[in-house]
Length: 259
Image: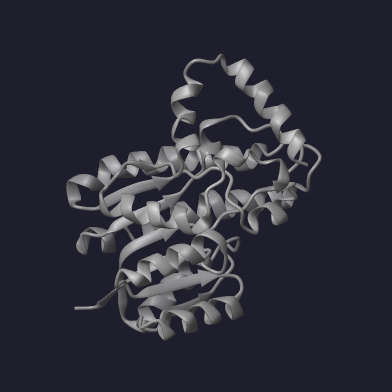
């Protein structure tokens, strides 16, 4: 039988790095992918020093159309199969969509939507065969319209919808499927997006390490969704009581305060 591994995308920083640490601490052998090979190698060395088996490192840019093929070929060359897939990679761009670079925003769709979908479907047969799990990283932003980060918010709405649908399809086949929906988390995301993180609401902030721990527990418990932190847990419920127009205006004001 092929050795089983957990593939984590976007593992070079932030939540992805913390997810790698949590999965490794719980005995999973990892396959790590991100653009920055040097950071992946540093993380791999850290995990080995803590007693984990050496992760498979796959330097890959998920914006590229052939990223799925690259990852699949690397795993096949190692003779491994997935029992868990963690689609963590993602990014956003702050500013009005019509004013920001179009190619950069299509890149958001490539990573947050296309690559996540590709990997989820590409490795579904392995997850079924190994009775494993799928963890897709969405965002509390997926419950809202997002003027000021329109494409990012829309991409996360897609992630939530797709993950919930895949859960219904894969559950009868023995696969756990969970969507992780964090709120503002202090990581490199803000700098890349051009967001002034000092304006994030402190009550919503949860550390990347705590997000990763809650995500792992939620996946293993087969929860439909994980919303780390008390402040985030009430957001989807509270949104039911406000008109969509009010939510749209409030989100727009909040986004502009973050710049």
